[in-house]
Amino acid sequence: MADDLGDEWWKTQPAGAASSPEASDGEGGGDTAMMQQERAPVPALSKKTEQPKECFLIQPKETNEDATKTRKRKKKKITDVLAKSEPKPGTPEDLQKLMKDYYSSNRSVIELEELTLPDSCFLKANDLTHSLSSYLKEICPKWVKLRKNHSEKKSVLMLIICGSAIRALELIRSMTAFRGDSKVMKLFAKHIKVQEQVKLLEKRVVHLGVGTPGRIKELIKQGGLNLNPLKFLVFDWNWRDQKLRRMMDIPEIRKEVFEILEMGVLSLCKSESLKLGLF
Image (cartoon, rainbow, N blue to C red; front, side, top):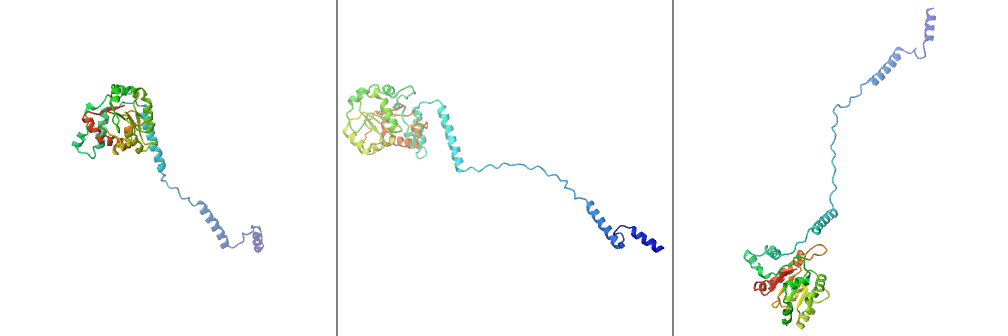
């Protein structure tokens, strides 16, 4: 009977329950392991909070093209300032200062003093109210008499120095009321060879010469233009070109003007036979 009860008990057990104790222990151990894995503590995040990082904007490197554009903009601003500023007429002091600044690097103190011109050699400067004809009439009221008495070739009585051939033509047209019957000669390089100008000066009596310092210097050097009979030397000082530069603001022209002054003009001024004017 005991055996019958044992059989009945085994029959009532669910499938798989009759396995050996070792197998039963094995299953239990597996479930326990899984539970332990599920309950295993997750590693805590670091309590150290990240500090916010600073953000730096990297400036793009300036290329040569950008630098050129910047320089161009700066030049334009300077031009704008000059355009808006009130023009100031040139004075004899301006010429004296330019000469000293130009020669200060290669002349001694004594030599610089020798370049100083006496105030008596300067005519009244243009106060920006004159046309060229009215200015010339003011500084040379006896022009007609001087013109009639002038008979020397290879020379002029009055020399007007300007910055370009185009400007020289403008000045010649604007002095009609002053020149009258005077013989005027263009003294610039455009379309005219220096040898042709030398021949013309040898053949004719010329009263007025208007031109650029480069060609005038060359004519003096070649003996085509004698400065001794010269009575008036006028600089087109106050006129500005499209870039708002005066004649003496351009280094090449300034250099040539000072070379002309040293080719006999300074000595004539000191002897008071030649007068200087700033138009």
